[in-house]
Length: 168
Image (cartoon, rainbow, N blue to C red; front, side, top):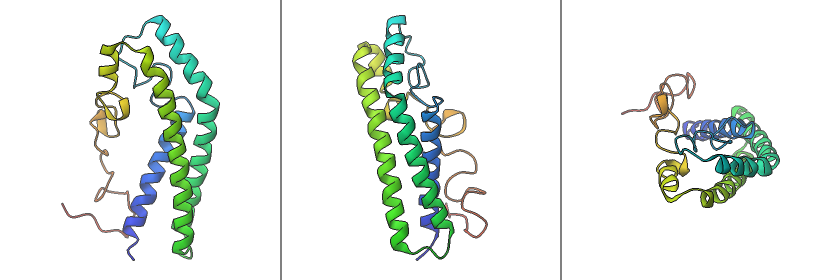
């Protein structure tokens, strides 16, 4: 079995964990008038209501983020250990995946609470991007939606020196 797909999966989950961590710390999308809400020209009343929604969910998001981060770290550590068997890696992957899914559900709940506060025009603009983050808000250089320089299959430094670059 090649370790390349396993490393890629571990890296993908690590990047998701970073996003979870940033979001849980209040620096990610959707915090107050974060990247997902910028450009919507929210009224003062809408901003107040959105802030209240985020504050209500903040503790749970932080807790779920910490759980997800710990699960991803355990999986990364196990994947880096050549002695770890496939069954153990599978179990750790499932735990990390479940933790990530819980984060997605919590973010979805927040989003579902915010959507009714928006006007039809604001909703349309909000829903243009991936998961309602707005256009160009995904990962990548300058919000272009790509993985960014040096990231992804074949990029320098991502898979480690023992992994060959991907063929175009």
